[in-house]
Length: 386
Image 1 (cartoon, rainbow, N blue to C red):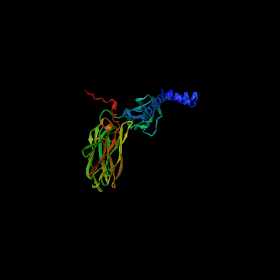
Image 2: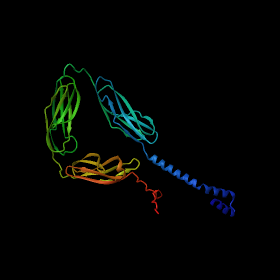
Image 3: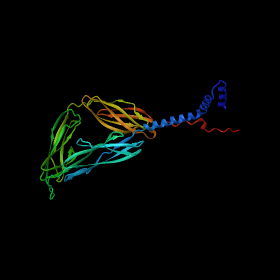
Image 4: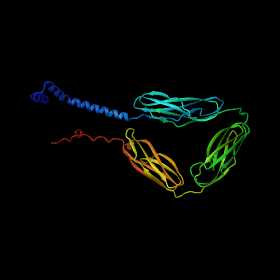
């Protein structure tokens, strides 16, 4: 009705039929155009949300088969790993193997569909000599991620080994140096040297015992004699001993190698602190919270630090400071928020030193939007009783 009246008024002022048609058509189409524009905005918003979801990639530590090999060579070692990929759309996964000798394999690619997918990868290497090596998998796309090192060991027999009877084994040990005076900072200050001798070529299994505690195991091939080593990083002044125990093929123990340590410049008054804690960052897309901060010490100290999310420890570590102390940046990796934690909470960084403790707490924003308030039109009405 309104459009008809408008057409009559425009016609009274001499508007052409074409102008009238255009104005009436435009007026009649206005509600539909608004609906189309709203739909387009909704589609754009949905596209932005979808595009904000980035692919996630993780790689398991490679496993070698055999992990330890003793026998005739050449021998083939098979190494396997698994790549986990999440992508909101189909994607191409490119990866390569990194070898312990510094070389790299060619790049291989696999196409996977959207969602969470697993890719089993494998490489095989032939060895004709003794080697202690490792392999890693490096994913190049859709994101660059490198696995931890997967270790293996190959020992090739170079001659006959007696099997008719067990050979005899002798062992001797000493400390080098047997006395240390100076700052007890991180790093080996006392090295223990063990000398193993055999009556016939044999594989010898051994372990190091320091002050009554087993601290290291090993296995070596000995043709006549061979040395093995272990080092300690003392944290305080003390006296002690180390011993090399032979576990097989013959059982015997070395002498006790005595040593002493004097941490001459110890600074018992050093204090540790959380010097700063940045506001935690909440990733709204993945609903994860991460944080970073700085820990400090006024002097030489071994500092244990930990991250708590709403009172629960989620990460920890150790830092070492020299005689003059200093600061070190530490970070809490992204942690997924679940349950009530999605509404917000707090992150705490705590430190513990030789003489004191300290901590700092900051709040983080939640990633769960509050439920919309009910529409007044939807509220139940109270009946009127007459």
